[in-house]
Structures are given as structure tokens and as C-alpha cells.
Length: 151
Image 1 (tube, one colour):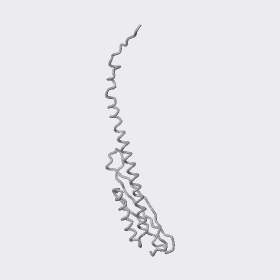
Image 2 (tube, rainbow, N blue to C red):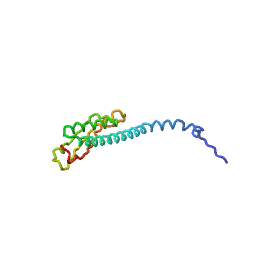
Image 3 (cartoon, helix red, strand yellow):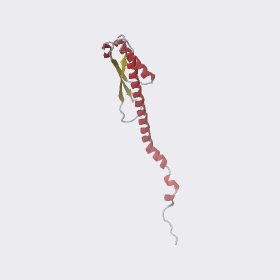
Image 4 (tube, helix red, strand yellow):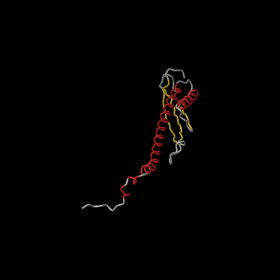
């Protein structure tokens, strides 16, 4: 005795799954694009943070080579701007603060110069919904002054 199926042939045909890949791609594409945007965002923040740290180190080193505190302020700001431009970091706002109190220390005693660099990077060109518009990155560095240098 053989059994026959009363089901229509359309249920078992290969055409039933036609278009399912397109639907899956339409559902997953926005999630994949969002994930890609977040990876780009994380990379941009990491590169900018490294550049700001390097700019602070360069600013402190340049300021420590100056003879006066006024010259130290100017050279530190120039060095930080040069380093940020050299790494193609575009800050919406930036500032360089230099602690030149080491110039007041008497000769023969250890003294340091500190530089703090702040940079606000913008995320306006990344089209990620719900993303804040910018992030402020700050780095500080210290460099020693020569003990026996005329100040």
C-alpha cells in the first residue's frame, strides 16, 4: 500500500526560498554598517589620542630647551601645533598650557617643565546615529631642565 501526499507541489519546490537572501541582507546591512562606523570611530579616537600625547611630549621637550618662560610658552605652542598638523589631526579647539615654574628654581637644583595639550576632535563627518558630536582629548608631559644651565 502506498501513501500519497495530498500537499500541493508548491510547498516542496525550490522556489519557496527564493528572495530570502535578499531579505536577510536588507536586515543585516544596517547593523553591519553601524559596526563598521564604530570601528572607524574607535580607530580615529585612538590615533588622535596618540597624536595628542606625542604633541604634549614634544611641547614639554621644546619648552625645556628654552632660556626664558616666555620663549618656553611660545615654543611649546608651536611644537604642539606642528606635531598635530604633522599627523593630520584637525582639532575643533585646542590649547597648550605650560607650567614654567621650573625657571624660578635656583641653579644646581632639579627643575621640570610640564606641558598639557587639549584637543577637541569632531565626529560630524561620521554618519552614526546617536553619536556625540565631539570628544575632548588631553595629554600631559614633563621634561627636565638642565640643572647647570643659565636661566
